Image (cartoon, rainbow, N blue to C red):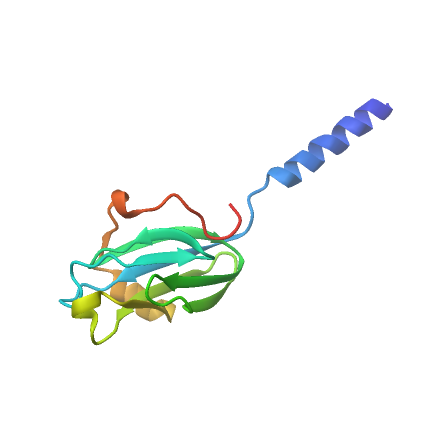
Length: 138
C-alpha cells in the first residue's frame, strides 16, 4: 500500500513539473521604411540575441512571464517589459534621424491595438535571421 501511495505521489509531482510555464507572446517588428533599409539591427532579450530584424518584417516568439529587457546593438539601455501570461506585447524598432548612415534602431513598446495595426501588412522574418536563443526561462 505504501508503494502505491509513493508511486501516486511521484506521478503527481512529475505531472506538476512537466506542465508548461506561463508564457506571453512578443511581436518584434520593423515597419517598412526607406531609412536604414540595408541594416538588420540585432534585438536581444535578457542579453540573449534573438533576431536580426529585416525591413518590413515581424518576428513572433513566446517569452516566460515576468520582467524582460529588450535591447539592440545600438541601444543597450533598451526597454523593460513586465509580461503577463497569455498577453501579447509589441516591440517596434524605431530608427534615429542619422539611421541612413548607421542603421541605429531602438526598441519601443507599442500599445497592443497600435501594434496589431502596424504588423498587419508585415511579412514574417526570414529564418536565416533568427538566432538560436531564448527570452527568459525556456
